[in-house]
Image 1 (cartoon, rainbow, N blue to C red):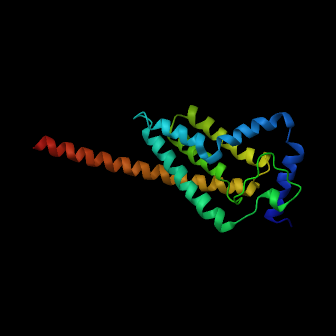
Image 2 (image 1 turned 60 degrees about the vertical axis):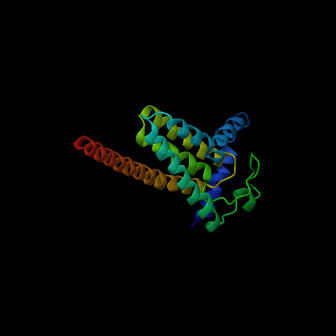
Image 3 (image 1 turned 135 degrees about the vertical axis):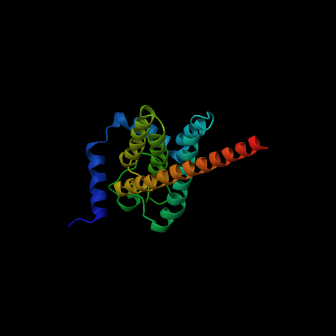
Length: 192
């Protein structure tokens, strides 16, 4: 019976041997760049803060990314300390500069889905669906480029499911409480 490590390795080797196409490599490098440090998602979330109509979504997305970063990059990567695929197996050839941090879970995947899942939940589907598709592309790019195992990507996704759900509920609760307090103050002023 194969171990999870062997399954991860076999999937990566299959991607390397059957899905890598030289003409597509620049495209996947651009897609992975969108996940670097979560910058693209942070910018989009920050833009949503400008309009009162989307401020709640922007706040939840930023909170989700921040919590995801702490769980993924500060806590889990250092606790699990899983070497990158190219460090563990010489057969894996990375197509970008070799990251120097640990592999599990994928920070790119976590940041991308942490934001995209908030968008999917809080924005019209015409924005949420493309965001989730782009997050999926960022996740796949990490496999295509040979810098993460499938298990790393799955781990990043699962952390993002947790953080996006938590951030959504925290922001909703905060906004509800703020509204109740605001309404309470306005009733008090009307009576005086």
